Image (tube, rainbow, N blue to C red; front, side, top):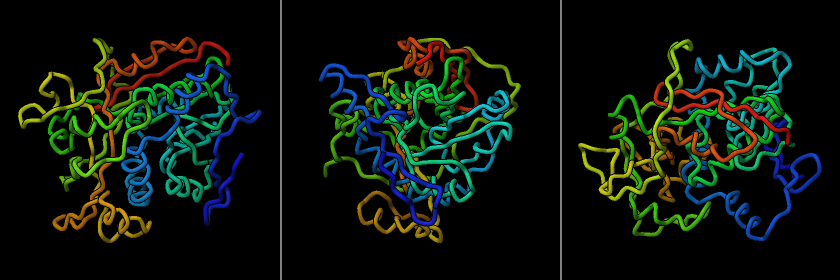
Length: 353
């Protein structure tokens, strides 16, 4: 176990999972299986640049906007038995880590900056990767993954993250997963996002290993700010059944003003950059903005007085979450619904181990 201390956050550590008893036992298999597993756990460049580095840079501002509890997430957490141990994978600023005072929470996130915010609030947290959680098998009573999987850039990594959530809970444990939907209630939002063009998506050369963007790749533009999606509304709202086949991850070849969801070959556009406007007066709180501007990872928008970061999103199509879990032999879907532009599922672990 390797421990990396983060300045000014004494309870905080970064866990780098190795093959150790009590933390993670990796089953032995063929060399091909090992290679495939390593590829899935290897973080693609697009996630490093447009997820990890972005959230590290915007963490204080992002956290200041994240305080409202989504009703259906709150209802799920409040329904759990007294004394339950709940694992929040991708906990962000930790807004759910104290929601149910009768339960125990452990949060993790890939962003050290967000984890420091959680640690400063006194939460039990650590830096960890959603595709390689540093918990032993059958550890928790429940787990949540709220608005996390859409930041993973390959289907294999999204599937691996779900498998990890199931692995770390006990038999009978519940897992709540929510993701942004391609079927947005407000269609105008899609015009404010930057679709990834086919040339860019082609740079993925295998699971978890896209190339570094070349000079000919499309540049990032300053585009209007859009509000974050959330699970809002009345928690008693009726749940809609999910039907139809899942859409495959799409490579858009073009986009026109009349149809922002469909590419020339008829496939749904699901890969986007979604902007975050970091006000100039907050841009240097983390000290990362100057470097991001110099490296082309962010742009200035003088009209808005902000540094514009773009975050990578794979927005999910109807039925896609079910398709990812359809081959899992150790969990079943016990609930599924669409709410406020999010697809959501609740899984129950059926087999110990």
